[in-house]
Length: 219
Image 1 (spheres, rainbow, N blue to C red):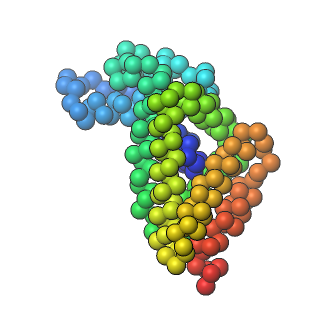
Image 2 (cartoon, one colour):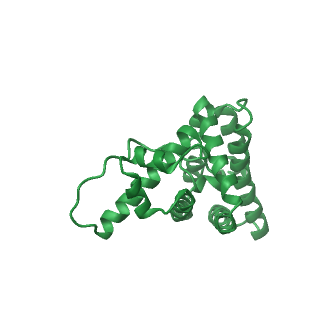
Image 3 (cartoon, rainbow, N blue to C red):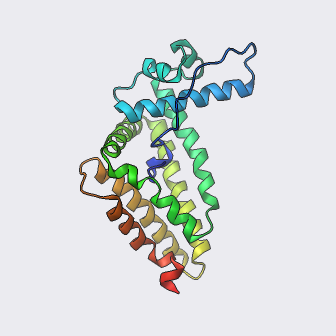
């Protein structure tokens, strides 16, 4: 489940299951090292979602991952490196959204996770992610990464809009794409300070903004 925002490509809302325990392996192959790195990043997300970024420590991540603290440091030198790792991974995953080629797939992508945002845990998730984002923008390198991710997200949405509405002027396509990104980001930000938005209300806002792309409405 993802909160669909510029930041959404950065931190996953939920992780299925426990990242697991470290298995004894005599040889640290590339696949093994990649698996350990993925395990640590998944554990970092669990910690952020449970207690926020500010309270999360490398020790917490190690415990959640079922690894020693030293094993975490093999892959990530410090807490900042975990933040960079999360951003790099989610930027990669963002590219998968570039293949959306139908209104139904776009709508499903945008409304996924609304039920999570609607409950008490949704507030905790949004606040934890906001803390990490604020920490990130204080760092010039991370801020540049976030900026590139933001621009890429708008480009991806503009491409989706262009495929669904090739008759729309390019400026209109990009404007609509930007509005979709901002709506998702706005809902997540609003959720950090208020519980007055229900899943149905958020779904209604998204559907209204998607009307220019909905063939049933346009038809």
